[in-house]
Image (cartoon, rainbow, N blue to C red; front, side):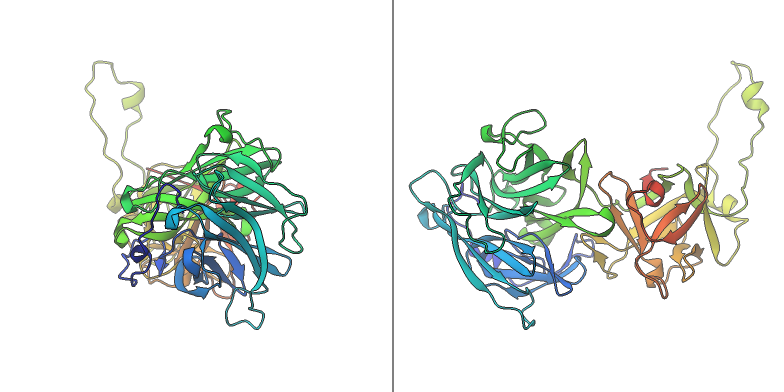
Length: 482
């Protein structure tokens, strides 16, 4: 919620869901503002937004509305500690109703699923406040639980960002704890801990104005949760510093409200909302993106862009391709070694698909890794499959030999082959997740009788399907333009 604006047009948050384009970044009902950190409960994933509403998903791709939390208010956050789910939210403030008086309140439940017998919210009480006179605004709370200690940040542009310590056993403020100022010129903060550093992420810019919103997320880091937080140029966040993490992209404007999502195999992603998705009437929507780390700093990653690529093994540097006989490009070596400088030159054509495919078997063809020679059997087209679902911010893809329907597929023996034509079966759909170093993990949606396997280079030349090892480069791949 922005303290720079005094009103929010509630109609923009309350319209009925309409048709969603096939290429949408997430599917289903994704309309939300100020989403909390995505949290798992009873096999589903939940996020809650301003005014009490929420979204739920089984796979992080297709979302639906429905979950509710009591209390209303704005910009909640959720964290699980032990058996409890703590929920922080703010009542008042943000410049709404003409003031900045606000309360940050805490409640807890043993389940986020309204159908669970353990679903019941218990009120903890107020842990931070602003009186409307002092230059601070007690909204936009966010949790961090690290080394047995529970921290809560809050604040907006109206004043400083503050941090307080809570008791993880009760959710109450630690007795005698006083707020510490850690940043200015931001709101909707979040915290992370990695490799001995505390990271404070905050949303800069203006919100709540659709495609005119300038929201973007920046970050600083410190060795202590209390700061001082500096950006990559050494500028303190208390002086307005902050390294860019994510800004507007394409037809999506105003990213804000960062929430870390840690998945299996060391995959990290983050949730946010876009103030305006132009493909969804400019409404505020949930979004999920890969998280990359470079030289100790987080930044938004990128799902693989649909197109044609060489798929390169990070283990060997060799290229994935059909295991077929090599078709030579017609060439006389003497033209290189014996030609005179004055002899005319002309471009040689690339090998054509017809020339290369003349030796391909008609049925299934296994794949291997070999020197990249820009041959048609080494060029793969990556295409999102409409209606096939996805996983945490990325759709399922089909991977086919370029300009053909020959598709990469898995089988029950952990083998990777190509089949003559794509049918849409689970073993032909691929989950492609960007990893924190920028490479990608490639996994079939499902294999007969087996699950959660990844494409891995076994030695220099043999691709196979085995459990992913985040400590090894063998299961890491990059997509290079031919």
